[in-house]
Each structure stands twice: as C-alpha cells, then as structure tokens.
Image (cartoon, rainbow, N blue to C red):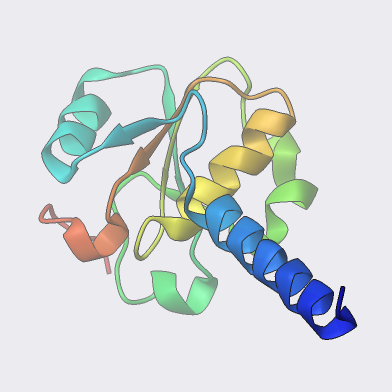
Length: 128
C-alpha cells in the first residue's frame, strides 16, 4: 500500500474525529431554546448561571445573575461552582458552553443545561 494513501486516510480520520468531538452532543446536557432557558432561570431557585465567554465579550452585555467563568479558566475555578445546584451555561453561539459542560461533567457535575444558540439566539434582557 502507498504511504501517501495511508497518511491521507489517517489525516481524514483525525479531521472527522475532531469535527465529531466538537459538534457531538454532551450526554446528560439539557439543550434549552431561549424561551425554555428564560423560563427555567425564573422557576429554578437552586441554580447557578455561568457565562463562559471571555471578559471582553461580557462587557457587551450579559444575562442578569450570571457569573463569568471563561471556558479558558473553568478547570482552575471548579471551586466557585456549587456541585449541588443545576448549572446553566451560555456563551456567544453555544459551542463553548457545550465544551464547558463536557469538562464539568467529566469532573463530577451532572445537573447541566445550556442555552442552545447562545447569546446570538437570546431575546431576553441584558445587563451592560
């Protein structure tokens, strides 16, 4: 077999795995549309709302009650997240909040939900 062919197949497999791992759903993560997200935030008293965007993005506006724990810092800041509360996550588009959920789940957090479509889909009020 030609080594170039083997190399090309290996590269294709790695690209497919990378794309799948980024876009695949997170088992146990509750995907909420903006209206559902807003309703659950109002109804659920035992919650924590986390904005996983970077601080510069948060300055453009955030959902009231959110704390900012950027995805880039989430592993170092587990201590700020109570394990006994439902965790609601959001970012700009929904991709980073899914990544954050994957990290949190691997570290023992299980009551996870995120805003599908992120801030780009949000139609509620923002704090600036």
